[in-house]
Length: 248
Ligand code: SF4
Image (cartoon, rainbow, N blue to C red; front, side, top):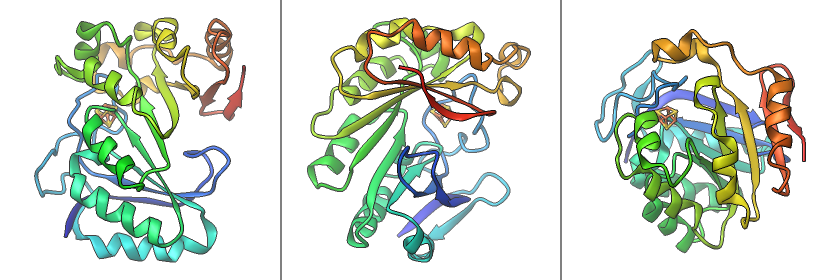
């Protein structure tokens, strides 16, 4: 089996899955084109077997298996990221099975557009945690579509992913000054047993000209935003300077 691989794997990360040491494998390709995507090198391919950037390659999936084996003594989990890992579902399922056979936990960082694919991984007990990126209020399909590059049904599909049962969940929002809607997003998490992480957006990497000119939110501004949603049980911020901090 082939995988369109970004060429990037972090053998040992303690950031992507808080409290665990995990390898992170970045798939190539994404079905969204977010205004602020800092991974914009990853977003051009979807369902095409073509590496589109330096270091990217179509690889045999065994290559990734070797990476996992090499890192195995130092990790307890593997996180599949991207791009959007669910766009290459067969490879994702295969690698999740492989990681499970090695006794590792499996997490997926996802934009949530394919709830049925996540659900299938849960059904097969191949997934231990979803890291779900929510970009706008889930009752605002217009804003969701605007941010993600024109996917009219994105908000509805992400809501289905948020409502999947039987899986640990962390929700993340990358926050930019012109796109702040944290309290409106947080309303959808009020009855969820999940962590909510506000990530500091990095405007300088955004493809959108206007966003690129914005000042990033400071740590203090993010802390204030986190405090404004104190009706949630567990709210954190993640900044370039200090990494992850629990605020509530
Ligand atoms: S979902 Fe993530 S990887 Fe895909 S375009 Fe948006 S920010 Fe980039």
